[in-house]
Length: 432
Image (cartoon, rainbow, N blue to C red; front, side, top):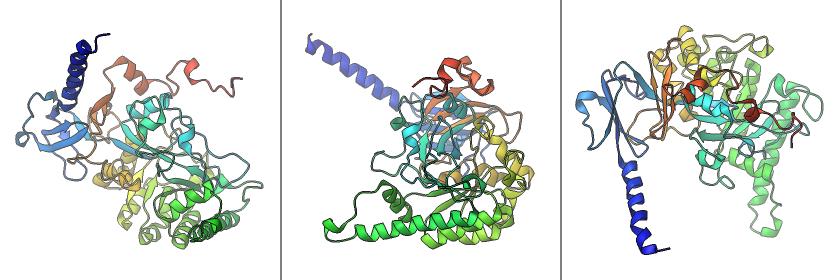
């Protein structure tokens, strides 16, 4: 092999790749919803190297040299949707041997090739907080993922070090989901007591870890390590809670132990909106649910978003996929507006508000310069039932295009789009 001959070819390939990365894309003529500012009619958006460069009136934004031009007249463009509560990827959590599993990491059990990721992109979702289930008081560590197309979970993470870094939040729950026979609590009061005891144990572990003599420090404990991250405010608690009394329990726990919390679901949050606002706690609500499946959802109200907004609570929405199909995410905001929520806050609840709840607002949620070029192209008004997500871009890469037959099936197909051989559960089907 003549290395001298091959070297120029390698250099040409490298330069071609570098040039491709430097080609800007300009989307011109659409109505843009930057979220952080007023909508722009006949606007333009410039992206370069996976970041937003400019967004504003078309006449005020020039196209960079050699830019790829996209005529999007008649379309709506807004930031990619951020789902604070999802279970895509065939996730798993803790087992039934205990009800408190702070050491369990959901990132160790995500199938990144599962069709649910393609369905989420078809719904305009570009970032998701993937959680273990809610059948435990603490079912484990969640993970924040960018919905890039990937072969392994490491390629979707926001954290750099999945072994030692904080790659998501902590999933907790109360109410009927986590009740049951021993070792589960059996009652709501016992649930709260068990959680409090675990956090007290973590506080004591923290004190012991501060001993100057290394020999007096406790043995490494994965459960305690995760809880110390919670107590330090590095890992946000995402708390599944429905009834107003359960929500108040969450607020008491957060106050007692000083952890940061996002109320997830908050079905009866409308009953205690002022208390939630006073605590400075954000809510990610679900407005599409079935009382027949969960009695705690019997008093679900389409007015919840409006009531929380009026009280001054930061409000987002989530899918809880597969409870609500990711492809219907835009409808959550539409229903909230029908219930009285302002249009601006409803759209923010799909984008910038959930980004804040994941500590990712510096990268996501608006079409601001320097943020990740995650955005969606819509056929019409985002709150219209007739509107389609036509394209989903992640970091400047087109990952869903309704015009492509391979992508279209994820938008309009059944719940399991892949062939049976790719969706089979090997455990239940007699596999390994």
